[in-house]
Length: 298
Ligand code: MTE
Image 1 (cartoon, protein in one colour):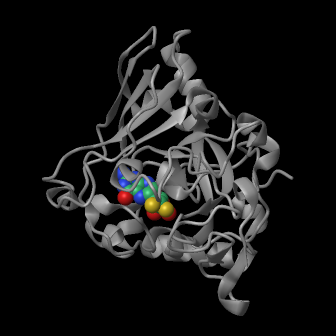
Image 2 (image 1 turned 30 degrees about the vertical axis):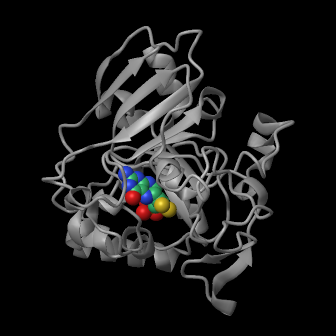
């Protein structure tokens, strides 16, 4: 089923949100992108999380480790102009403007589940472009096997980077075939508007079948390599956070179960629900891992 967020949001809610947006809370006063009529593939029809939840319950350690730190402290991040360096094993390395990588006219809506490794989840209506198209634009060379991503490193603007919480800059990576899967997108918006800074403006990765920490925010560099890239969480705690980090209810985190999750904003029973293999995207991605021991390659 293919839906736009306005199709699955009760009209009253929609209007409330419009009023809420018009009232213009500082952190959410992002420009509308005029989404009407754009195609949306691979979207879930589950109830959406509210914009309030999506933009106020965040992990973005560059702005602090509390869930409300990013919405309080990311507002000042200068997100324009912003360019992304694409380098390594590509035919056309260079510095690409966000508007060239993800022109507004090319944005697709993708309503995806986001499952954090901490055990909570949301449903978010992203706007973005397939990562595969961006990589094709740069011209991936035959020997490339992996894609690595980096967040901006700027302790002046990102005060969390003055503390040794992680080995900054935040780094993540995918196997090339994972990156080329049509579910993987670079998002520049949500709820029909420009991304709030706390959600990774101006451009962030979204890989919905993996734990949320793989979906790196505020990306400044994408490199094609022939060896598995360093990833910040894996480097910090290799026994807890693997390179693959596929959502898997059968492989527990060493310190907690991954069998269930708490849907943020969920009503009855506190929103507890079963976690799905590959976060429910097995039909699209399971074949990428055929024959692999997913308990070993967690
Ligand atoms: N990217 C950067 N640069 N820094 C971060 O701390 N946190 C990750 C991921 N991307 C993080 C990041 C984690 S743990 C999650 S669950 C998601 O972002 C949260 O995305 P959201 O705040 O937009 O819901």
